[in-house]
Image 1 (cartoon, protein in one colour):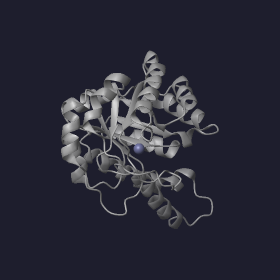
Image 2 (cartoon, rainbow, N blue to C red):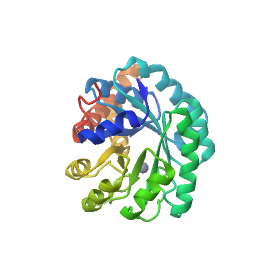
Image 3 (cartoon, protein in one colour):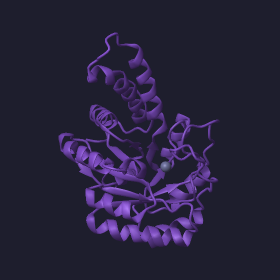
Image 4 (tube, protein in one colour):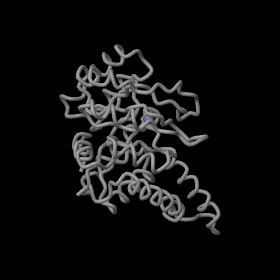
Length: 284
Ligand SMILES: [Zn+2]
C-alpha cells in the first residue's frame, strides 16, 4: 500500500530501526525492490531523482508504482529525492508522489528555510510529506560532477529549521558522501546524538552506499530512521548484467532470462541492506 513518510518513519524512530530508501528508475529495479521488500516484510521507500522524471519518466514511474502498490501488503512510500525545482515538486505531488525532498542544502540557511516552507505549504494540504536537508552531504552528483564541500549539520540550527519549516524529516550531514567512496567515511556519531536529542522529526542519512555496516548501524541506534541507498544497487545491476552477458548461448534470450541475473544480484544486495538497517518484519 502507498503511504507517506510519517507512516513509516515515526514508527521506525520509536522502535530503533531504519527504513531503506532506494533510488529507482524503471521496472527491473522497482519490481525487484518491491518483491524483495514483500519477501522480507520490510517497509520500503522508492525514490526518484529529478533526472529520472525527464521526458515521460514521471509517467512511467508513477503509473507503475501506483498500479502495483496495492498488490503489496507492505507500506511503500513514493518519494521525490533531492529536488530543487518547484515546478518539478508541484508536478510530482500532482502525479501522486506521497513524499518529496526539497534540497536547499547549498543555500544560506534563511533561504533554505524560506524555500522549504514553500514546499511544505504545497505538499501538506495533499497529505504529502516533506524531507529537507540541513548542512550539506557532498560527494558526486549522478552525472559524476562534484557536489561541493561537506558541511556538517549544526545542532544549534536544527530546532529553528524544523519549527519554522514544519518539515517531516531532516537529512543531516554527519560524514557520509554521495556516490562510491574512495576511502571509507568516518561518521560523526557524537554530533548525531546531539542532533537527535534536539530534532522533533526523524533523521535521514544520505550516501548510505559503501558506508561500513557497523557505522550505519551505529547511526541507526543513535537516531537515523531513513537510509538512502543508490550506488550499491547500480553496482549490483552491473554485476548481474555481466553475468547475464556471459551466460546465454542463444542470440535471442527471453527477457526474463536476460534480466534474471540482474534481478538476482539486486535481490541479494537489497536483502543485505534490509538486514543492515534492521527493517525485516517491520512492514507488517
Ligand atoms: Zn542524497
